Image 1: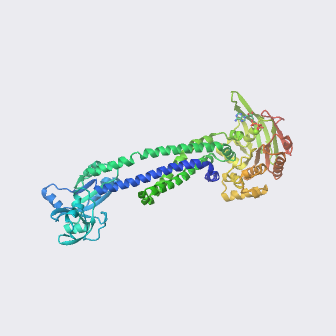
Image 2: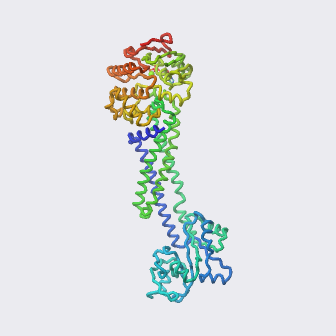
Image 3: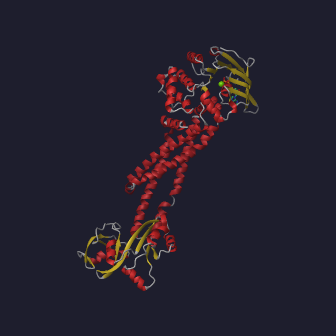
Length: 362
Length: 229
Ligand SMILES: Nc1ncnc2c1ncn2[C@@H]1O[C@H](COP(=O)(O)OP(=O)(O)OP(=O)(O)O)[C@@H](O)[C@H]1O
Ligand SMILES: [Mg+2]
């Protein structure tokens, strides 16, 4: 039983020159697939990050039915039910990419009512350190002008930086750590869950699912997030699968030809093996294993090369290279499966031949 | 020990009709015999040899190896029989080109289920016996044709088969080397190895213990012929 892999390894190692061409084609295909996939993933992540910066696809807020309730929400006195976040995760599952918890209250500042937004300490481009650390929306920063500090409810605040403009109400906001906002409003929970969806997931559909899930809260959909998601999907993911299928077919064709040429050249050798008492399984195994090994070697070389190439060209890929190994493993695994499948017809034809005839003709 | 009973092998001729490669051959070969099979080209020598080795299913008749009726076995059981009971030697050596001599000789032992260590030890002993130890690590292409045939014989011997079946083992060798190979076969026969050798060289056939002559797929003398060396 172990003779088959041993023979295949010996044959490929000693006569590697004969397998070099097929190996090179497989490597080129694997390199193309790996590089394309890695660059596409890096681009998708970059686009997703851009979409996040623009705003969430969906926002979950407390439901207000009367003017009084709405006012309480505006003041930050009404929080979402504690179960809302778990209900959102259950309803959206893997389609939910990120969830950001916020507490939004309103206060007078620089002569206007501004949204005071409690966020996670790492949610902004600049980190917030401690309860007095804040970041300003660009419009609020402009209105405050050159005033050295900011005071809120009589507390001096340290400005860590100004956020890039989004063109929305956020530009007027004052951002501070969530715990500080909760202390300010005297509220335990949050009153806003900002949901980012996986690329390609329709925000309209997600909204419908959340509505059915009866969160005890209102769901607001942002068309902007929806459009951006769809654009990302259009530009990146749509046709990759079919391109890879074509590549796999080319690889399979190459391996079919390689297996055929190999078996044709080794007819006498394989018939001799049968004469020596090799079982059909051994001959079959040696041919299938050889093809699998060829595909594995070619695709491993190609995947490594493709990853290196993509990383050299694209800094975003280089940054995410540590995660590329799973893609390389998947590429090699797929190549091995194609290699085995490609050799099956030739291997079956080989064991069906009359060994005596092969020996007489050889 | 080997009993061939009314063996017939018929091929369909390409243009229609039939070719009778073997037409009712009966033969008895004792343990320890060295039999040469001679005859014209196309007389059925190779067909008889492969049929005796369980590789060519006859159209009619039987081959019995020891107690076993070879063609009562299924294909896998016949492969198992070839692994342990039969050693084939070929005119063109048919060594596996990418394996070393040692590995070529070890191959049948590996196929028969020996561990790598056991198979290598057995192969080394055989090569030693054949005076080929110095060539263990060489590949067939690095050897002279006479040395290749020695390795081919070593490969046939490694599992201690009941019978060595050699099809024109000297066909690709110059006369001097051919004589050396037949010397070797005679030595092995002297040690008790049963051998059937196909040849059309009557000078070499005369050095075997017995000559069996085929003509158009039938024995040339009255079968069953029985002469001991
Ligand atoms: N697969 C086959 N199909 C058709 N005819 C065959 C086949 N194998 C052998 N024969 C025919 O059977 C006859 C005997 O062939 P065989 O090879 O046994 O002869 P041989 O005595 O070994 O000849 P040589 O000395 O040339 O090797 C020949 O006429 C040959 O053409
Ligand atoms: Mg012949």
